Length: 394
Ligand SMILES: *Cc1c(COP(=O)(O)O)cnc(C)c1O
Image (cartoon, rainbow, N blue to C red):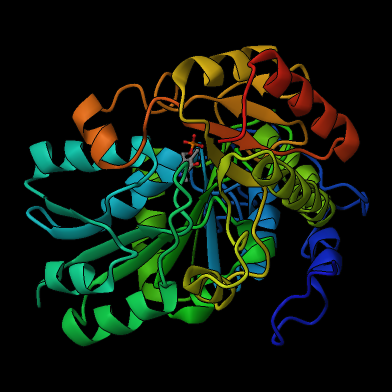
């Protein structure tokens, strides 16, 4: 499958990912150097020079930010120490007592940060099922300040119509900042700014870096005004990404097209395989007739490589997770290697059981994040685990 960028990009995404512009290194180094320097000398007292202090700006970071702005179809991009600090920098653009409408199946850390803002700054946060557009519309107020969504959500893989969210928000709460967390799809598969979002942010710890060797976040926008506020916050709070991480991220991004394409191909095959074994599989587009599939493909170029399955039996799930060898037990996703986890015991353990149950995060739920290994090896690993667990098709 060839993934092409929407028409206003000069080249296809695979080409854009590899070609990094704006490297002003004096020796024309092919790889952007790490400017591991906190300070930069001024040419004289009267002139500042392009960089002075790495909290405010750094040459390695600048090249990365220009590269990401291009890939995310933005005018401005900023990299931060991790995904959560990216969201924090965005939320700090909001006044005290802001009204926020957010998804009800957000990343756990995002929930925690919103709760903190609720306690600390009087935010009023309404969490809604964003796949239910009527419920979403009902939650909006004329003075809503911020809308925060994810699609698909993780690990439930619930899909919301991100284009419809824009339309509804603009008609009912025209001043609200529209924000999307695009970590699950990455810029290879979705560009929310094209659909009218004000800000898109991602955890660069996942697909952007791809090797679980760094933590990072990225914030992208087309608006000069938003960029000004975000940069103020990053500089004031000191949340920018360090030069070495910028270098690693520049390196990781080059192979993102290949990585996402291969992981996705593997994931499609594994999702079908698990479904054929009788498991209930949550994966975008698995059922070609479903309405959600049409909605999904109205904004995404592919399903990605994260899925979840219900076995109907916690013990069966535990045995599967403990038996796989290639699928390592770990939180996170987006790296080259395959991972497996049980959200109720790991990433989502901090959520109260009643809330988890209401969100459909039952204890038998297994999350599978597919990497770029040979797909037959991956299938054999899962086949063996299902046999060990004595999983029987209902
Ligand atoms: C991991 C993740 C984050 C947080 O990013 P960190 O880099 O871990 O701080 C935010 N949103 C989603 C959807 C994530 O998966």
